[in-house]
Image (cartoon, rainbow, N blue to C red; front, side, top):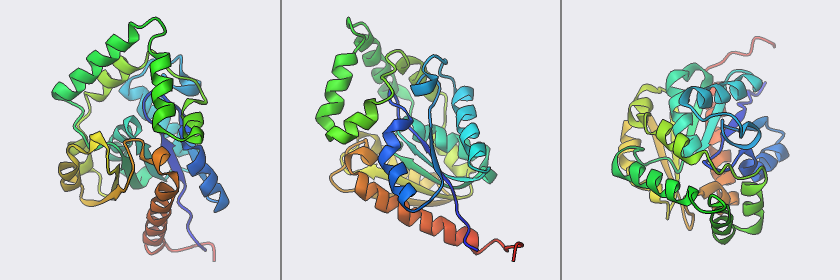
Length: 248
């Protein structure tokens, strides 16, 4: 009997679970269980306030829906909360993939990002035109459609960034005993501290995707899917080797 490790996807800021559509479709072709959740303040939870506790609870709901143990995959904002969840609940995470999440969410970069978000929010449309225009410039039409499909949460930025600034991902990576894959686009500005993040992992691997930006799974979806399939094969083989099938 082959052990199947389900995959739970956690999205980036100002998008929703729809950003993972192509990855879900690819896993569906393999008949592999997978789910993409919405974090508070995004998608189906757009009216919920964003908090650390709320984000971790949303992830936990997804984990339970998939049977209680998953390969946890997060991009950007989702990556930071995937790291935190894995540190708090290592028995529920068979493997961790943190994409575009290798910059410390503290200090002047975070403060500058929050100031920019507050300025954009003062625009007449709260930054909707600017956001959608940049998404359509940076991504393919399909990637942009997936990113924008469930609406743009215009008011979540400051709360989400403020909450994320309380996390300590290097400490959390050091606490998680399972395998970790840090997946970054070659041109990702969030690679700033990737060597420190890799060094913090007990069992870490670094994957840099050529010609990809920060939104690596959307910029290079086929390449990301190949990377993910290799990770799944690794995790499945590792887990199968440690489990006796009592059903035979």
